[in-house]
Length: 160
Image (cartoon, rainbow, N blue to C red; front, side, top):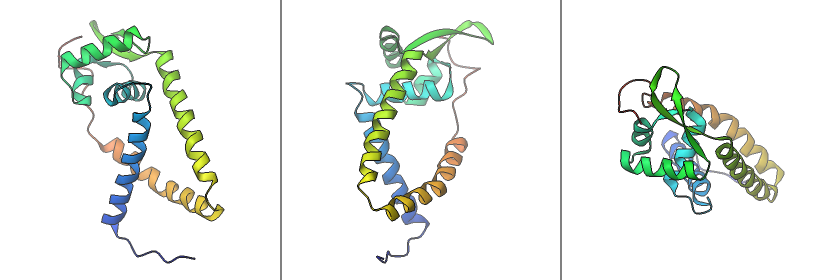
């Protein structure tokens, strides 16, 4: 068995960052011509549900006019739609459509198949070690995502 140097929290954090960044870049880069912002926006709509356009723009770090153009493109492709806000009938929210969800699911299946193929080439003990590491890392990542401040969706900001 190979000896690995003792790693502290900083080294493990850096390795996790590299892993997450690499997986996210791969996930977002193979989108049939979709930009990273488009892919991230669609994923956010799936994850968080209907959201105000202004909040969506802020969350994705783009201007409201840029997000308006992006949402219009997603609507034209049938991947997103505008829906009424149940709390304020004057407000329109951006929501993912079933076609948008299916596109995300298709991409996940393709990515999972690709990664499973790579894992199949590893020795069994490495796959077991990765599995154990994932069982440790996933709760940490999920907690980090829960603790990340989310943009407000029900009050403030202009209607779209």
